[in-house]
Image (cartoon, rainbow, N blue to C red):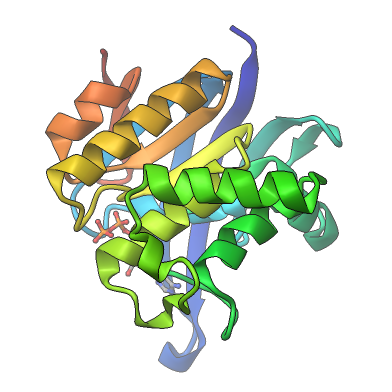
Length: 237
Ligand SMILES: Nc1ncnc2c1ncn2[C@@H]1O[C@H](COP(=O)(O)OP(=O)(O)OP(=O)(O)O)[C@@H](O)[C@H]1O
């Protein structure tokens, strides 16, 4: 299997300006490699730095050290630590997806439009985008009565399912999943598992953070545990 992402000694330190420049370590010395189609699960105590790792890959946070070599279709090998904002925007549009429980959408954009817009960015026709978006929303069991509503008022689980549909409809090369089953019922968890399996088969690589260990072990290939700032490979499932 070809390598997709190589992380070497990734570090993120926050400088707290309102605390007179005090430093808070988000994560440090984090290294691992991710192959095409591989799924790595990361566990660790609250505050260990799991979300910080995902956010530095997606560049919500600018890393303060290390290397993150991503094998991109658009740019060839590119270091996400030093990539420009413009490059990151292009990568987020087409190659790297991120799912969290929190929904960040424009006001007055319907749930269907949220998913359609994601796939339109990939360059498909409006007809195809609508069809794919509807299939995704149905897959994630979002009631049809909500498709033309504004997601701001959705429940936590509905927002998460919309986020999953928006990110997964693109079939990105790399998908980052921050608690993708939190607040979901068993039937919705099964929909998530099925879509993860479909994406893996089509070559998507994933990194996920889970509190639901049983679910995690049913989908990942490798499990890393973060403790006292050190990332240890626990086992290969
Ligand atoms: N934007 C930020 N500014 C300052 N400190 C931050 C920021 N984001 C995270 N941190 C700090 O970095 C450390 C790691 O946080 P992170 O959210 O990555 O932990 P986590 O392992 O994902 O925790 P949880 O399981 O509770 O979500 C924590 O000490 C946190 O307070």
